[in-house]
Image (cartoon, rainbow over all chains, first blue to last red):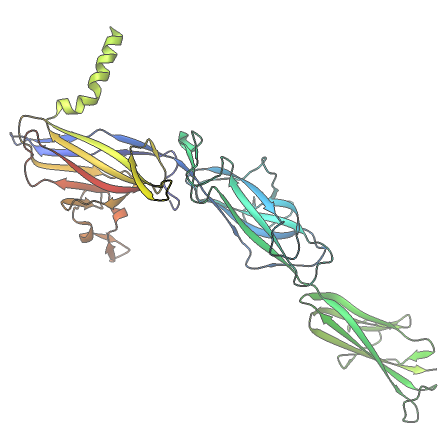
Length: 303
Length: 154
């Protein structure tokens, strides 16, 4: 009963008097009965169900924002849902591709199981005090920068009508009374937020030459040690990053010379992430988050 | 003849309670609305509603009049609260309330509600199920009075 007496309920009031007549007999007298019907109050709230910003990458699709729509009125009511991505205070407008109702009630978006919402066709009908989870799916524009934010609002509005509190829709309330707009205006809005987390990688390559005579001249027989430093920047994570470098013409790769972060890797495509094939070295870096570096070295001999 | 009978019934029906009993009792319920007038000043209005919404403030009024030929002694008026109405008090110090359907009566502040095993809390206005007025003095012939209390639509 958190939201009040159910619409259509009749409030009946009767008082009773009792007294003793001169003969000492108790007499009981009822009053007339006053009947008043409780109207339907139209009220709804929308609240984001996400704990924080939803992390996305540029160009991704079907990113999910979660909302909870609650009927805070006192009667059963259908609600029309409208998303709006064109709001201020953000760096980009996500493209809203669909709204999905959490029809299996597990609170989590289940593609192909939860029902896609179409305005005017399956407006969710909520009993008094009931709520439903609603998912808004959006595409993120390609080319957004790290830490760009995109906001989408979801509005739920009573299908009977909205307006200033006290606005009355005669005869349209549950139980035959009127429907009256409550303190929420019979609509509610909240926003969900996407944040772009992106990572980029850059390389610096340097070479150190050691000649057979203890000097640094580049002559046949000199050993060149190449150092590749990969710098990952941004707030996101690079997945399956790998460094590849071809062996320069006129040089010969020195077997077993690949290192990653100072640890030697084997040339075979085996358990470690280093390999030498087709006259090029490759080192897999796995997942690397922004703000880190990876250093790879290998050696060649000048022919 | 039928038409005549209906007209006659319409005439007497509202007075039936008054005619057969020596004390007449009538109940009225008003809703209190505060509205802002054109100057922005808050103004409170009372009207008899057909419909209300949760949160509406109601004023219950019981009028009594001794229309009989004898005094009425030990006069008690009892008004059970409709389920959908939460009691909001009365200005009448003589009123007693019950929070258990009319078994135990007293001032609201004196009543306790069981709150778990062996725990009690003070009764709150919304716990009230009945309100009653006990007149110490007999109601003389022709005397009348008005009793009232406030409630709010749950």
